[in-house]
Amino acid sequence: MRRLTIVGDMNSRPPSRAIGIFAHPDDEVFCAGGTFRQWSNEGTHVTIVSATRGEAGQIRDAEVATRANLGMVRERELRAACEALGVQDVRVLDHADGHVSEIDPVCLTEELASIINEAEPDAVVTFGEDGAYGHPDHIAIGEATRRAVDLLAARGRRIELLRSHFPRQGMSIARRLADWLTSSEQRTLPATSYGLALSLFAEESATMRFASDDVRIAWFPPRTAIVEQGEPATSLCLILSGSVDVIEEVEGVHRRLRQLGEGDFFGELGISRGHNRSATVVATSNVTCLVLSPDAPSKFAGRGSSAHGEAAPADAAVPPTELDVITINVEDQLDAKLAALTSHRSQYPVNPRIFPRHMLLEMYGKEHFVRMATNG
Image (cartoon, rainbow, N blue to C red; front, side):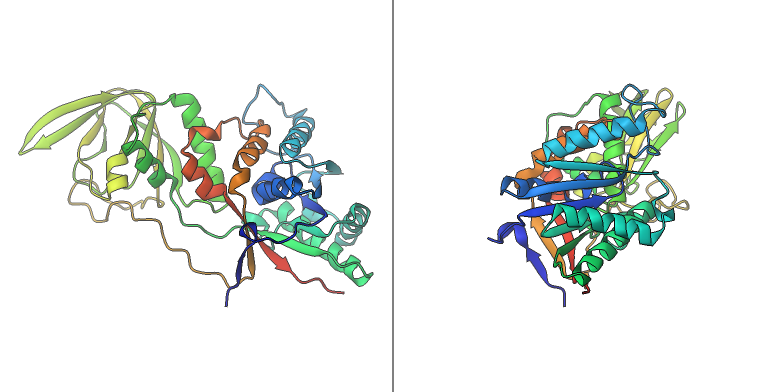
């Protein structure tokens, strides 16, 4: 049976010293940022180790980094993020980004064992066996950390090993945003900044299993019916450029309800209320949309009111895991975690606070770990 411990809701004692060992800058935030801040607030001395400088990563803000200096920039961002998390000690190793899995396992294990031994932690945090989403660097550093802890245990040191775990939560960002939009007076948002934030947020959230949405950019020429009245509501759209007419048909008579433009959403009513489209949306110019779907769209789905299918389903139930999962409630550390995330500006040049706070809490308010038994 699955045993679930909500550590953040218990009077469990935090470790006196802890170390997190990851592959790249920003891993520390997604894996355990709230936990590190919570421990730090309770007096834990926290050390963060990044095996690389992340120099092979994306450049999502060309004003803050170039390919030549990305590694240096990301190291600086890591230190700023760790400051937001209350981390006292930051160490960046000199391994090449994208090549951690090619390092001799014995050498990497010994290197990490030496660092852990020097830091004298009670707890070590690293990636789970799947590396969060299968990244070879994540898997390699997680396994090397496990071996290092086992090696130290064999030498008489007992250290708790926590491996980050990302259960499939089954929630939909599109549905949460649709619910927010239908209950809010805020209907138009800055298209460029919000579109970037939403696309990165949804993409990363899906990667880390916080959400399950399909995210894509779609272009529609003039006179295209982007959605049709009566058909299943399967997506939420944000207009990035261009304009559309919203047209309702009643007993064969077409009535133009409104025109929408950059920064406007459409499709939220059908998603939020679970019914078919209440109007047709037609491009009046070249239109580019950011499209969020609770599920990946079928390539063979028909169109119109006679199309098979249903409106976007409710969030899927997630089957229980048989792992011994520890869950730490870090809702009180959400602001610190978001501050750490946005410190990594070369990767996340966005302000996540533009999203509903309840959605952020649902996604980032708990962190999950598998407690591993050490061999020794």
